[in-house]
Image (cartoon, rainbow, N blue to C red; front, side, top):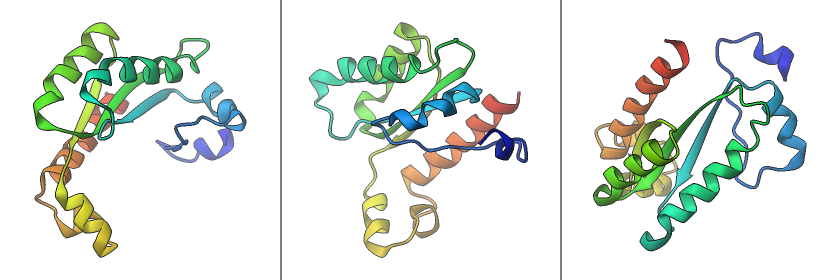
Length: 142
């Protein structure tokens, strides 16, 4: 993986949320960690605990404390976005790089078996994902 990563400016590695032990060696060469939290199924009264536990799990993989960490929130209802962003940035001191809202266009694109960015480029989720890409570019390269 280290040899492969030298061939590109950025190499994204998507690991499952269960973090299998065989993947841990990736964290010894990674420089940035983007934690995607999917909040759709988390009960509102448990969001704070869920976020804290999930972030702690991933942050503890950075054993020597050398990585930059960021969060992307996925499937978030508009009413709780501000509260969640403030909680993460103020209490856990991790930047929120993007928020992808709950959007019916995503479900519709799944039924069409086509990416929602292509099928619904002006949907809330598409716009948020594009904005997230711009923020990531700045975060990684500036």
